[in-house]
Amino acid sequence: MVYKIVTGENSEILRKKAQDVKEVNSEIRNLIEEMRKIMKENDGIGLAAPQIGLDLNLFVAEIDYDKNKKGKFYALINPQIISKSKATEIVEEGCLSLPKEFGEVERSKRVTIVGLNEFGKKVKIKAEGLLARVFQHEIDHLNGILFADKASKIRKEK
Image (tube, rainbow, N blue to C red; front, side):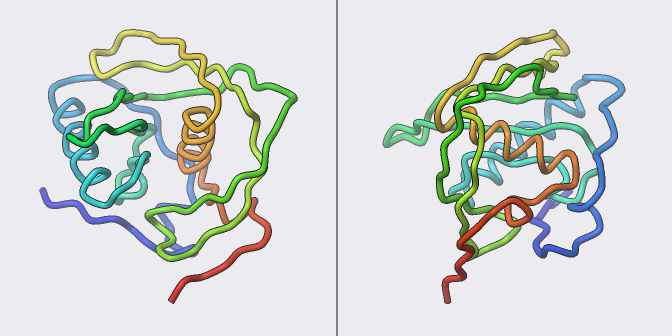
């Protein structure tokens, strides 16, 4: 199947809470690889399943690319934030589903999340800085929240 990125603040799939993945199987692993490819082709650092039109509680993220577009890759299924730091920071964000739109969003500097990896194994990840921000942004997607809902100083590029 060919997936494309769903855009627009009023898109129904982007505004609903994603359904939990019931079983982690080869179909889900293939989807994760496809999502990774779509994310990189679009110069993204995170991509949630609803962003490609799928009602699934799943996202991928990869930051710190080197020149070969290799970085630490994360695939999280049914993720939940279990703790976040009181310390926050405001950083400008964008989103593949809201092209050419940017805004400043306040998020926790550190988060701990739990979920399943692409093999169905339970994982717990402590993240800080950009990775923590990406995780919070993608989990918002899984809950039907877009960055623009939380952003101030929104600007649109032509």
